[in-house]
Length: 96
View (cartoon, rainbow, N blue to C red):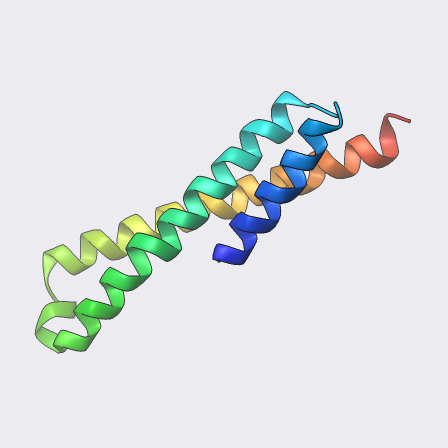
């Protein structure tokens, strides 16, 4: 998922540099970058750490809250990535 953040950052940075700025694309790109870094840098390591502790740790309320947070974060990531994809396709093909 770090790769997704890097690709979106590079592509949107290049678009911004060349003057092809769009508020929807910038906002959704920002959300994609933040949520993907949060998912891969915070949620995944903590979930794996708790799973390594055994069944007792994965049945706790802390694990449930962490897992629910990761699911919500991933849903935001998926929606933002979809919005970014659709907006970039609109900018490439529809508005010419």
